[in-house]
Image (cartoon, rainbow, N blue to C red; front, side, top):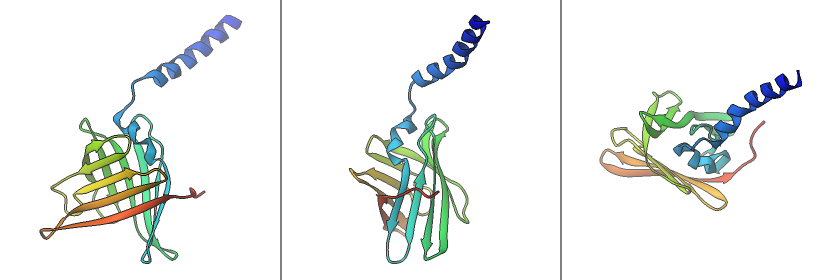
Amino acid sequence: MRRIVTLALLLAVGPVAVAAQAPGHEGDRLSWLAGCWRASSPRRTLHEWWMPPVGGTLLGMSRAVRGDSVMSWEFVRIEPVNGRLSYVARPSGQREAVFPATLVNDTVAVFADPAHDFPQRIIYRRRPDSLFARIEGTVQGEERYVEFPFARAACPM
């Protein structure tokens, strides 16, 4: 009986050990995004939360608030789409948009879709104690951008 229990335990643990040794995914390089972030301005406060990557996929969400009112929200996935790591955004009141990665490393992630309205590029930059995000693109032929200097924040319960 003891042998059967030991064998059952080994079989149950075996796949976990193999999965832990599996090669990493490109999205796993963005583990530095994980956590809770806050950017404040006189007009609004932006909260952004990212779950740690699992299997190369990160899940995130954000909301912009003024006082006790939610101005906008967004659900985001960073995951492979058609074999390419992509930023998949679902902003409040808009259709889902996919921005394929153009650069991903241990400090910067850039996603772009030149055919999208605004923004055409989404950039995250890791700083030693913070996170800097920027969206940019053209609007009626003019280059525009919005910057988000995020500080690490306590995660809500």
